[in-house]
Image 1 (cartoon, rainbow, N blue to C red):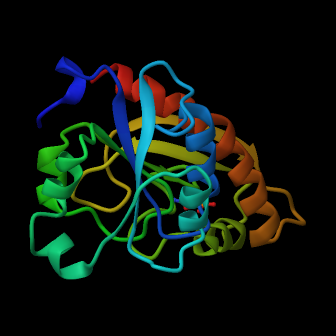
Image 2: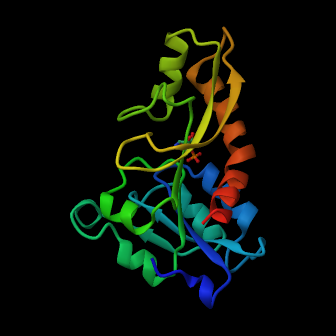
Length: 203
Ligand code: GRF
């Protein structure tokens, strides 16, 4: 893709999110935005969501990050919004609770430049339908004693690309999906931005 880095040293991240956006907030706080700069060479430049009511859009407003609401037809059958992303010089895509599969058009336009975070130790507890509390309920039902997070590159299959990072946490006998989700969220918030920074430094 056209990389803004030749005349613009700032790498611009698009964060794709469908939900509350606590990871998006951490990414914004770590890297900053155009209105609230922080990192010397990376900024969150766009929040992309498939849901007009997603909590992440309030976070975008708080930090004055531009937003893009995407629709199924152009995403899956059009150019995957590649043109719109390039128009605003996006260099890297970070999925943070984004529930749609990423189309090939986008993967081809951003090779090794799309990462995701999954709230379990892949390859276990991944794939279609394995998101949110469904993951934690399955982990608890199987009496696992350990869970964790996986940060990975995104390919054409759900939760499948090469792993960049994993961290573990215990699953306690008294855990519910909610208590385990809280523990996992803390791990995500501690590690995601730093791992994204490392992945961007390799591009
Ligand atoms: C996180 O647990 C992440 O692992 C998963 O979706 C959740 C998003 O949470 N992919 P939030 O919206 O960032 O709070």
